[in-house]
Length: 176
Image 1 (cartoon, rainbow, N blue to C red):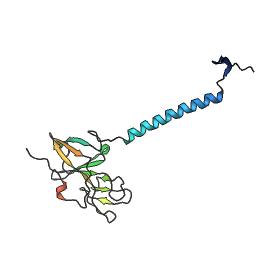
Image 2 (image 1 turned 90 degrees about the vertical axis):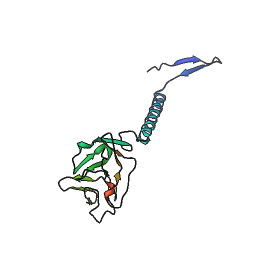
Image 3 (image 1 turned 120 degrees about the horizontal axis):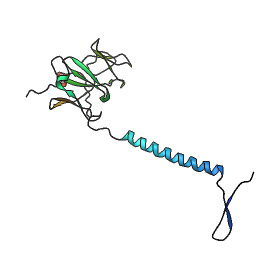
Image 4 (image 1 turned 90 degrees about the horizontal axis):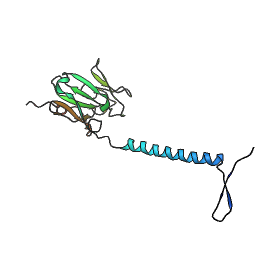
């Protein structure tokens, strides 16, 4: 089999072979693909590490809804924001963080029993996040709740740890 070679002359007049072998082609291709992979990995890392304190996202101020949309005695999971919005029987609001203070597992609201449960170690918490188990040493963490133009808003930047539930943790809409 004849191999065709391109021959070019150098400045000194000598002939030089310009042979692109399969090996050189593969080496060059792998270098290019490796460089692209590094660029993609770097870009993905920057997106992952960027701050997510944008309006409406966890780590920022979240507008949950109108005050009247939440009936007294209700517990509503705000899944994307990692908290439960609790409206107690008297009409006050609390935003309870979905993380267990013991191991950081995601707690679940079991409406039939009226309690939060941790699936990691079966700890239970009442509707206000107060612990009912010896396994946990404190109540569920909360986020500040405030009202603006008839809307319920939660500041998910400031996690507030608490040893026990207190009546001061419940926020009421100011009467105008």
